[in-house]
Length: 259
Image (tube, rainbow, N blue to C red; front, side, top):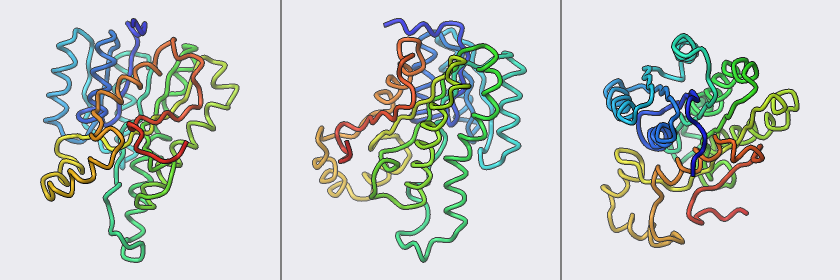
């Protein structure tokens, strides 16, 4: 399926590994030019090389989204290079394992940092990209949330931040002045995704038997892959998904219990 993304310009936050990198590659494979930002420069260099190998224009920008000035610098770099931005993927986030199991033993700094890294990072990037999308009368904003934002069960500071992201996208999708300028706003709620070097990989190495028991309890008997999430995101960025606006699409293999 041709998603007609050739000549489009996209920014994927947290785009150097995992779902972010898979999404950047999926967009590049459709002919989209892709900028990524992340904290680790070695991962950025590797990701940019992989993206350029597809023939697209690629930009990698080191940034920490907990620092508002870094977000400003990312946007200035992208606009200086391209003068436009059609697609924003708010993928950067995390914090699901931050803090301690006890709320009383978890400091307020954890709550604030998790909220800033997820919800406020999305807000700050969206506010800066809207003028360009509205000027060109076309834009796609997709925010990667979590099934933890749709139901209970995770650590509350993470669930709260992810719920806020879903709410943000729904509210923006109902703004006539934005969507009638050709913009859509959607969120993706992944379930358990195997990403090397992250939480589930660590759990597997720590307790293989317990990990395998958890996997067996899942409907499909496996974790998802970043690519399975990325393909859904790429579709949402296309004109073929022009009637999908304000949706929160679960990509979890049936793991979650909510409808």
